[in-house]
Length: 417
Ligand code: GDP
Ligand code: IMO
Ligand code: MG
Image 1 (cartoon, rainbow, N blue to C red):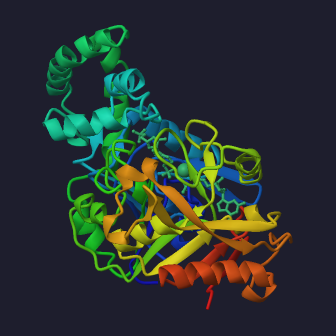
Image 2: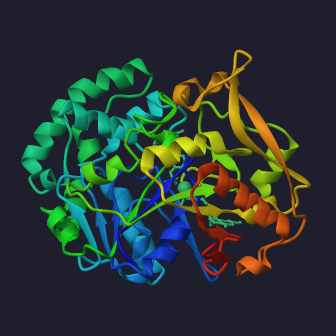
Image 3: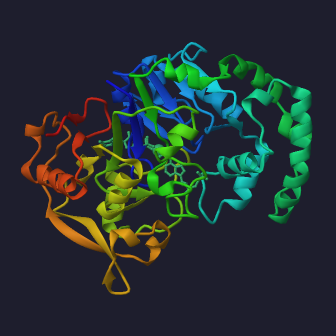
């Protein structure tokens, strides 16, 4: 399979982990280009469940996995993830995991700052925003800085002079150099063998068999999402190039989208259902955060916003996930437009940051009232499920190439025509 990128079309948790696991079979290399431990990608293989945060899901099939320069990595969490995988019989070595030396490092003060200041947005508390902030401010610490412990201490000390007053202002205790440095030299020693100076060159050696694994989703993009209720990186396609340092011509730009919508944390969500239906979707879809365990907010599919994701990323294929979660609905609503001040808005005027003002315009479709979790081919799907898929394809003018009907690898309907 040629070069492929998988990008979340909503607010994350679309099922990227499962799809990367499926797609990685046909690719040699899996690349993460942004985000960090805020991501939670679940892969279910047989009766085993894996939750990946930093390491690309290609690790489960023994592929080469690359962590790009715009991923932010907490060294302790990385080592824990490696350890958890090894306890599950998955070997992680420098043969199958490479990390860019330019990757920025999340330290204890980033986590504390996030805990102290991230409540309004409802962040994952993993120190993501503060780590990117340091990067932009040019005070960040990168993987290549970890091996020089004296230089590292000096940088940390300088950063603490800025951080501690902010922590104090937010009612959090100041941090000492010793607290931040505790265990870090040992962690650095373990991580050093995985570090690669020039990942671009490595990536280019595998042209024609690359799979890029997005984290988060288009509407959480720092530039193109529902700012300020977003993450601090670019999950959208542009992020793939800045986040690795090389241009790759993608043959397959797969947008991954749930058959309904979820969101964790705060921010606008026009099709949200804060009622029995929302609760039902949460329960049936197991909609609790992979990283934080928080209940996910649930609502109807938003095709108007999906059209924006198609545009932003140049999506040429869609993977529709969790269709089985709608099995019991008599009627299914889909947002096909928005009203603002009593007037339908034009797509040219769509602004994600104004989504809290928008009132959804719904199209109602008939449900299928049938368990589809055993469907494996298009012919196995009930007529109304096919109608639902066709409606999405017609609206977005993009083909649905895969439909998810359950958590397991095999619970998938391929190649929708
Ligand atoms: P990601 O962050 O995009 O990788 O998604 P998460 O792993 O956070 O959340 C998606 C959840 O839905 C996981 O628990 C998956 O195992 C599960 N899942 C993925 N695809 C399907 C599907 O087609 N049907 C059902 N019922 N669950 C699915
Ligand atoms: P995956 O890769 C869903 C959300 C947080 C919060 C906002 C900012 O599993 O799809 P951050 O910690 O990034 O500063 O939080 O972004 N968020 C996610 N929501 N899935 C994710 O990742 C997310 N990563 C961050 O809930 O609203
Ligand atoms: Mg997730």
